[in-house]
Length: 353
Length: 167
Image 1 (cartoon, each protein chain N blue to C red):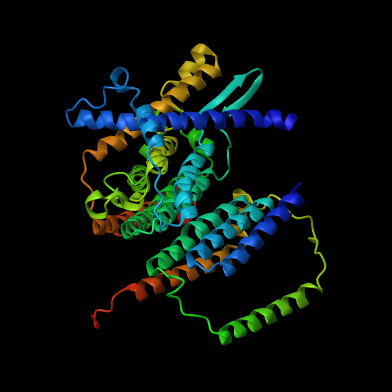
Image 2 (tube, each protein chain N blue to C red):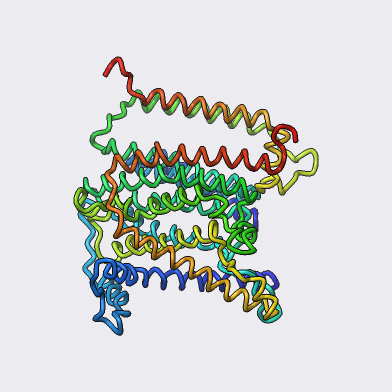
């Protein structure tokens, strides 16, 4: 019984996180269309409900009720497995993210985080590296040339950018000395000057670019490049299976924004945190404001993703690979070496000081 | 509890490993192999080696098997296109595999369950302890292993590089 009560906050947080993730992903589709409309001087969806707010639900109903087509020559089991893997993998990442600080309810104190893995950053990498299979299996099982080409493009892009992403994070880990998300966020406590994007601007830049590539977002949305590959790896998909692929892209966007905010922008830390604690003497209020601050950061990055989509044109495939392998990886390696030297000077191991 | 999880995982991993060999379609074989790696990562978790489990997933399931799958998908091996295994090949394979099994059974039947001589450190698999041990006690072997990786990497680059004299 005691163990069950200890697990209860984690389980509740996971359920809430699951619902919130899906809700945000749902409204990201609405947000994307509204942002696109804003940037192109249009109005955007405005028919379903006030300001078109019910549009995502209308889209959902459309997705569900469409005819489901599985090609005759497709491998049926793998054809269904592909979108399922994509969906499961992107929902798994949020478990290790710290959504807020300490909260005291009913005499118990707990963190707003499902699990604090000591290797949380590595866990995120493991899930990201496995999520490639969603694209690969889906593209191959469709038994269609364009799907296969799209799948191979997509997975080689993800693998290539995973490398520089990993290297940029290693530099960050070198500085913080931990792989736990909560620990990294707590170290950024105490004002904007302590946030990691100021200490690690190069890491942040590389990570941001790689996050775009990992999410298959424009300007790196080559897997679904319409002009060359019809619809990319999901050409043969229809109905909710296509919905899963599109939805997983939006969830990935949300999770990437959350990871960027946690690693580089202080997570749930906000300016004036100590002041608020002193004036209100309530950790709960500070935590709730922190959760709000975290979500504001996340929403900003989601907006940033959409903003970039309508600003920068798509890369050509060789340009993409050149950027990944010839620019980002050497840059990340340089950043790592520089960080190592700085850390050694800081801890006075260099030159025997 | 732990023992039953272990037996379940062991059964599943042996089943998937078996399916790797039995599957006719190479892509299915690769997918079963990926599942096998996941069950092995589960075994590492049971041994309290979180770091090893995750690195195993990142490296094997996330990188190496993706490349395997890549090559096999690009070659697009079909059942009818595959070279037919002659009876001679099957015979030779059975003898080779069978003799390996014979040796393994002969060796393993003589062993008894080994207990660690001194109390084993159950926390050694956690990243902090593992890192400390790797960078202090086993620093030299660790560095030599990384040099091996570097050599392999340079070798791959040289192999992939076009020879300016031939093209």
